[in-house]
Length: 353
Ligand code: SF4
Ligand code: SF4
Image (tube, rainbow, N blue to C red; front, side):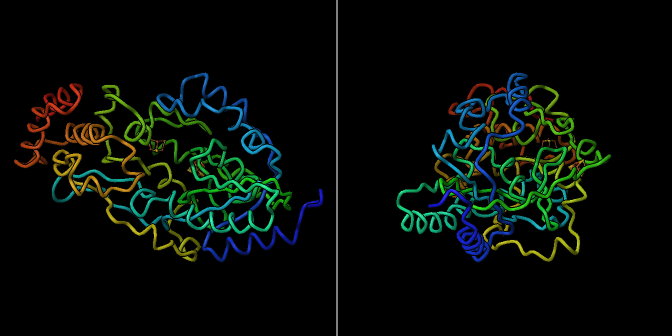
């Protein structure tokens, strides 16, 4: 393999990735991240909260050449999981909580990996002396920063990548880190935000400062990653998110359901299997229930106890007229359920209207 970037191989890989249905593809040098200082300050301030894994393997996270010695290039891909069409709150019928859109269809890790791995494997067979490591959220790599360098998109004040070509931030990212020297694609460049502050204004918990999200105030973190009961203020939030939160993406002008956004279809893998769960159903789940067992790995990230905590917190915020007998009985059942942590049972006891 020559030291010069292999343009023919780059184009061939990008062509295969496009044929595999990725909405956006690109390549960048395997180089240390630019925002290492900002990331380390964010960690030092404790904004990663319970996500201790963010502080682990820091050297790898800041430089892909530590994770893959001799790495020369990062091949980046994005899948579009939503076209951004408006999504109503669950205000009718039985009280329910919404699921963030990225988690409504098949598990995105599997959907990305099952198309990246065969391409990486065929490259391994062709270039046995080289490495091709597939990364889909499972490896310590700064996927967002590499995606920006590779021209997938630009980072907005909400800290998410805003995909080029009208994709908005309804995208999930994957990468192949390789020791082969490929030709980088062009970064988009420029600030996508200007004087806009819509995501900051729309965040229900004031978690966003420009280009910084305080995890310990973010609904996404608090409903998925956080263990234990969130701070008391969390009950007062005015929204219906049970798992994750899309409010900052929904507010962003780049992520609206526009004519341009409709041009690039969403893969059927991401078609919603469920968009919400009723609070009563969640409070009645058991570990062995088919409904709980059949949740995708991404939805199984919170424990059953934390799903119930999330449902109880939403129930606590309901007006008295939204309660029904089924929900009352399910809350009482939680209170009496000795298999649940005492914090969840106490939460149930304090949740009745
Ligand atoms: S996911 Fe929700 S809570 Fe978190 S920063 Fe975005 S709008 Fe705020
Ligand atoms: S809502 Fe506005 S400030 Fe926030 S990411 Fe989008 S363009 Fe940037």
